[in-house]
Length: 268
Image 1 (cartoon, rainbow, N blue to C red):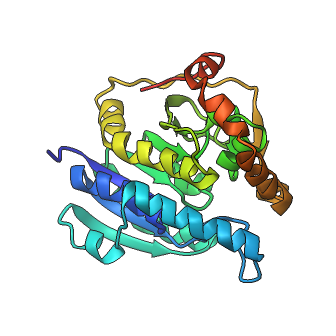
Image 2: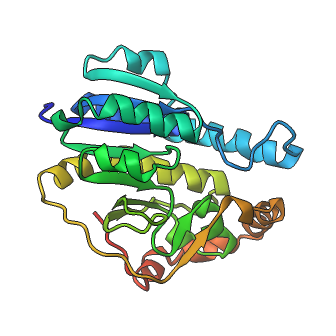
């Protein structure tokens, strides 16, 4: 039953649409859609290897969560307004002007895969500001963090973090971590897709619990690593596939729960 109104800010890729579909089915939303690439590192001149990786990633995500169409979601009656933006400046300015007129009617803001939110826009967005981070904070913050969890041979730290937004990078107080079900023999892209699957399955309940104050946020530690787009090297991706072929990740997956207990994870 729809009982709340939200600002929903997302990217426009299938993974973002899968979460959007769950939220739109359960809440009245003003939907801000940010046009962005599938990964920051992808360009028109990407290598054959990176393109192969992206093709498998798209296919495995669709196999795990389904294939969502923008035009189908646009027909849903729970959408109050759609705001399409591209580029950080347009995202912050255009969104600010439109949202500030209706923000008082909204109960919260949910963000997944958007551009950088400037302080001016952050100020008018309805609170709480809830962000979905593709990685486990504080251990892995920033860009492409699922990739770096595998690069450091830590599949036990694959997952998603639902947290409050602050002025830092994925550093706000944490509501919960969503940990995927990993199976022996999974390829890197299948493991990434499993993270998206657990997010789609649980996000509506998580948001409901946050708004009903059943789920409280906790301050996250200052430890961990922050990765930026400039840190990416294709060699890292190739190393991940080499370790997969050698069965390195299966050693951790065999002991997944034991390994996860070594970290401060907030499951929900």
